[in-house]
Image 1 (cartoon, helix red, strand yellow):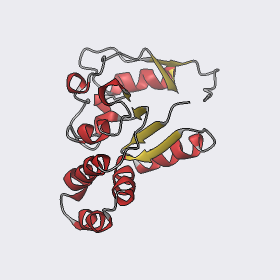
Image 2: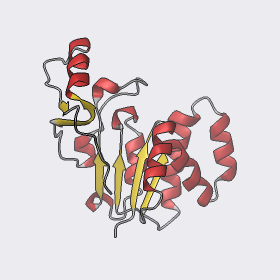
Image 3: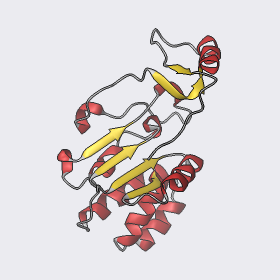
Length: 178
């Protein structure tokens, strides 16, 4: 099997991803900043992690830089990296993430984002061309909400001319399969 890193920005979402993947071999789920701290400590940068935590630019600049530097000091790599809520990632964070792919640009990097959900104001979609990503690939089915919820959201949120995905039938309960 593949060694997969599943990463996001939001702590509660990461906690959920850790829970639902706990019994799945080969998947590591984490927030981006927890990943930065863990990999930096594993590479021997304990003091730098503490300094980054206290610095005003620690979370935006220093932690991603430590993640990149840690990659230079270790041979470990992931076969695939999956980023959920990718609109929450700053552009320069992608360089540090890409460094952890086992085969560089040959590795599998998947980024899922919705620019209309950029609640942290971090910048938007990943730099697809720079990362060699294919896309965007529009989603046509929202598996988290019913059609009724999607209709209300569509009425309340301007789509900027883009169509939004339809939801699921209210009678159908979503199931997660791994």
